Length: 256
Image 1: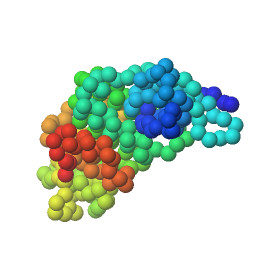
Image 2: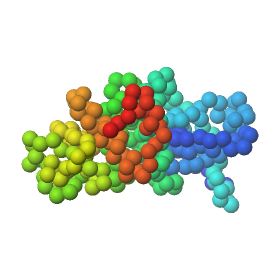
Image 3: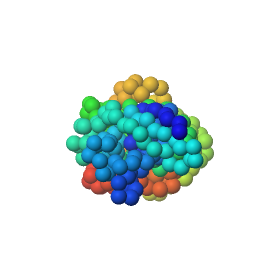
Image 4: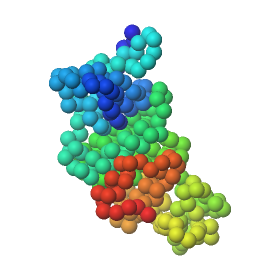
């Protein structure tokens, strides 16, 4: 039996029989893992109260020689993110982020950058000093890059002209073509974005995470960027996360 250790963030848990839980985690060393936590439902001492969604955990687990589901042997709480759990809107944002990771990522592929991104945004959300929507924009634009689904933000994704040449025009999102289109390639009913919003998304998508959060969005730009990403991500993910629907309801409407 081989035993391993890792830092992790819990993405999802489901009941397995009368006593056990199957937990899915994003780890710093092994990527996404599903582990069985034996007697986690029955015992009041074993893993008591810590196997909760988006909790940061230090874990050890073992793999049997015959394969099958690895077993969670020990888990200690690195951070419960208590402020997130007492704020229903923050909980909705955190749930959206972990569902994106769980939906996209296959098991067994190391994803240290994605782990660092999720850990960073959850910590900032728990600190409560950065606007929820800005953290979500940061997470989504970086997630898209790591997932190989980044939108084209420098050129029209249809005619490929430079968007810098369209300073006086309102640009338009076009999810099917993978980014932003100029007014000459736009169509009726699309989501409009200002050039300023597009440039801020570019800046937010690169460099140091802490430095990226120093970018100041106006409220209209926050709204535009939020609408763009919360439509773009599900389109290219191939499904609409359930947690995103809850987030829309809590904010008082759907994103168009």
